[in-house]
Length: 262
Length: 262
View 1 (spheres, rainbow over the protein chains, first blue to last red):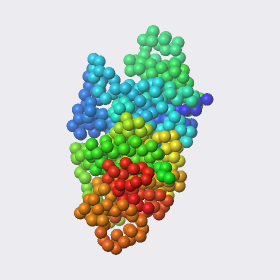
View 2: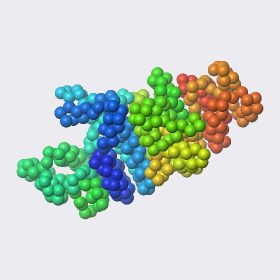
View 3: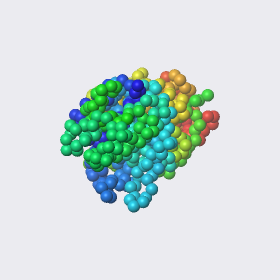
View 4: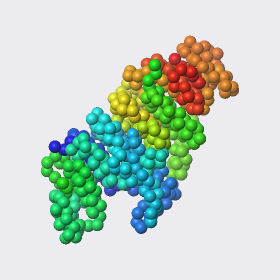
């Protein structure tokens, strides 16, 4: 019996007002304990541009320099997070907006400089999460909403991948709860044919995953998500569900739209 | 015996890096339960200017239009709040950053339009504060840090005076704790001579306040703070202390620098 839903929603939903409202309505309607982790969307880039802060990329990967960490702290931790909280409150969901710095829930380490200096990017110290304040909030009927930010314990906020925050929280909380981790993205699920949006694979376990890898049918984009999913499953999370934001919250218990990984 | 310190620090401290570090060191060192409420400082104006959002005033009072509420949500609720949290964490103070929207702690009403339309400014619904999640955090050893933002319960974030948030929290929590409310500002305390920075009145009670009013020795700027202070005292708060950020946290129990109101 799943008793905690941990749901990650990406920038594609944050940036789409109609889809966001549908999503928030379905999220608020989940009666079980739940946590939301949100990405940032394009608003950080838009505000950074207006402030004259150039988005920098190396090999297609975004670099978080000193100006950029201020922008994402403002936009993810302030604007996006607090607007989501206020909107959930209006839907009778008692949300509280957090980053990994708050109550030291998600300590991280600034990524070491190797070939690329990613700047103020944090890798989660996965064994050091502090779940006590989170559990206290959940047990009090409060719904945590996380921005994709952590901290280094030395006073510095760090930018951290929202998928990783979701899986780290799911793993840490699986000691206490039966967790379903849900990744909302732009497809209906993991596809057996990247060109057919309806070719959803409903169930993936380790054997099926190996077969799919051998057959090379999976798109490159889905592989990090599946690695993340199996990392969570291997560390105590009961189920991972991957699918479209409109579908995956309709069925919080039995029937499943999307791809269930277990 | 005071068992909860509620401390409001203004923009003059937020804007002064050296003073801020001194303040945070003294704040972190308070071993009793504590809550910090911060103002915004000039960074919101600076970022608003860069974004091409004009600061609007009517009769010297700032108007919070739709663009401005986004800026203060970003800057107060994101940048300033999360940087304070990260810095307190580095000083072994287990801070959590909040707004009044979070966990619906501070519901507010958008100020009605009369002679002036203040825009997205919230007046605290003082009898409706939800202290249960706050008490749960405080009892768990967590230190709440509030940005001067509330919400209307209908999805809208509102800009709210930090002094009022501090006194509202102090009153609501005085049902559970013996509260000292501390206002840090740029003077050493309430002055009997506005031109003499050392003419600090150490103690004000209702009789002394009336005498000072009759003698017309108080500066106009201090009157709203004193009204706020007596409002708190009349509603259950044990003590209010007004003074400079460098002084008022040195003495969390007995001897007092600044002006004590009781």
